Structure formats: structure tokens, C-alpha cells
Length: 366
Ligand code: FNR
Image 1 (tube, rainbow, N blue to C red):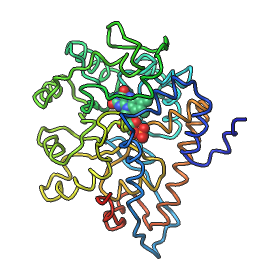
Image 2: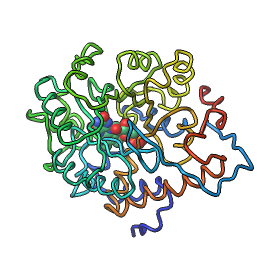
Image 3: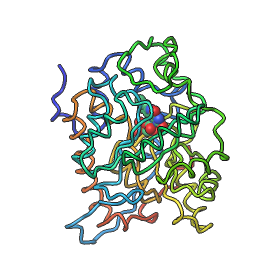
């Protein structure tokens, strides 16, 4: 007996349903993370070490949590991050997320390794709907150039270059499954080895020689804002700002890459004071992803200085369990939580969120 959609009251509820409803191979690919999954658990539990310092007696009858990301207006400061192989969870794949993103006026990041063809995902967007491209850089730069310039031509408004995956992490839950899905639109152009799980099968084209020296080249082939996805220490945030990119995503790839990588929110707390000291805080937008499951998590990240947060697995689980209705409800639940959270911490707008509203002293003591 599967619970009805109305019985899902928060994002974690969708995970519990999806675990039972999904095919084992799909669950293995979506839920898995590197090695012993310590970083996976840390991503969410790091938020549990941050507490609120709410303001009282602020008139919060009206609260507005709309914001902008890379210049794009959005209704709430989260975006649908890139997750590969959407058709493992739902026959229609990523276009389901596209429709929900439109309905809720949030940005969708399109993965290089989407199950749907790139153009299909762009075509599924409504006029004016904003999408970004997540890029895995191919060893063959001509292929990468084609992908980037095609995305720009089709109207993508941001290029997110994944920099935390020169080699794919060992995800043993996934590796135990023999990956046989035929529904994927694998862009590697190479024969895949299916004996090592879905992740290994689709990722052999990724260039491990990618380096800081390549950034000017990306700058030269596109006018899209460039964001480095998967930055994990303040020194690299500073380097990114100096390299002239528009943003970084502090991220450990949902715990799927380097085991014992720190949570993004901890790196954020390390980063913002340094950026302020160097006068770089307005030079670069800071995003975080990993373990965001509640609007209180979003609020904590924004108080600490993030421009927005990415959310991955919860939307995959909602889609896998209930299709678009599930994703719509997951997004609505976050909006409902956000409205209440803003009121209870005494913030009327995103601009009012600031570091004084959180107590992050326990964040660094684990
Ligand atoms: C990912 N992620 C990811 N990132 C990326 O840059 N390219 C990709 O193809 C994928 N694929 C992918 C598949 C699946 C199934 C997951 C769960 C994740 C990482 C993703 O963008 C993001 O960093 C994390 O998912 C954020 O963590 P949460 O929200 O899943 O906890």
C-alpha cells in the first residue's frame, strides 16, 4: 500500500515512498553516494548544527521570498540541480522537472547526461522559462564547444561547469546493480561498460585534465555566465572570483564524489568572512547544494550568505513516486515552509536575511 500524495508532508516523505516504489537499479543510482556514504549523511546533518536567532516583533504579515539568481528572477531561492538519467525514475524523464519548474517559477539546470535529449528539455520549457546547462567537459573539446554554443543559442542563461568529478566516485550501491537501462541519451559517443553501475557506464568521456588554465577558453566560447560547480574550499572560491567567473556552487556532488568532503554549508561559513575581508562578496555569487530538505535549510544557507541553493534527490524521488504532481507538491511544500520560516525568524524579504539570524558556532565542531 503506497501512501497517497496528500500524505507526503515534507521532502523526506517522498524519499521513503520512492524507496519502495522505484526499481532497484534506479534507487541504487539515485540514492547512492561514495564509499560509506559519510559525506552523504553529513550534508544533511550539518544543517542540524546551525540554530536560529530570530527577531521578534517585526511586522511579518507580508513576506516575500522571491529573489534573483544570475540575474534571473525566481519565486524562491532554490533551483532544480542537474541530476543525470531522469528516465530511470520516470518514463518521461527530465521534462517532468521542466514543467514543475515552470509552474513554480524556479530555474532548472539541465544535465549533460540527461535521459531526454537536450533539445527536448528546452522545447518542454515555456516561453521565458529560464534553464541553465550543467557541463561535463569532454576530452574532445570540439564536442564541448558544440554543446555549449548550442545551449547558448537555445537560450540557456548559465553554464555550470562541474569541477568535482575528474573521475567518478565509487558508489557501491550503484555498482552492485548491473546497469542495463536502454532509455538513456548518453552523449559520450563511446561504447559503455555496464558492469560497474550506471555512473561508471556513462562517464568515461569526462576529461580529468581539466584545469584553471581552461577557464579563459570557456570565457571565449560563450557569453553565458560561468559558474564552477563543486568548489570545496575558500581558496578556490577566491581563485574563481579572480578568474572572473560569475559564481560557484559549493558542493560535494551530493556525497557521490570524494568521501569525507565537507558539507557545502560548512564551506560556506568558512568562505563568506574571507570574501568580505577581501572585498569580493559582490564579485561572485555563491550557491550551495547537498542535503537541502527543508526551507529552514534554505534559510540557514541564505543567512550565511548564499544566493541560492540547489536541490537534487528530493525532486527525483517525488517524480519517481508520483510524477509531476509529486514534484509540484514537493515545491509547494517548500514554499509553505519558507513562508512560515521567514515569519518565525522575523524576515520580510530575502535582503533581510543575514548572519546575525543564525548561530553557527557548532558548525565546525563535529
Ligand atoms: C547528481 N549530481 C550531478 N551533478 C552534476 O554536476 N552532473 C550530474 O550529471 C549529476 N548527476 C547526479 C545524479 C544523481 C542521481 C544525483 C543524486 C546527483 C549532483 C547534483 O547536481 C547535486 O550536487 C546533488 O544532488 C545535491 O545533493 P542532494 O540535493 O541530492 O542532496
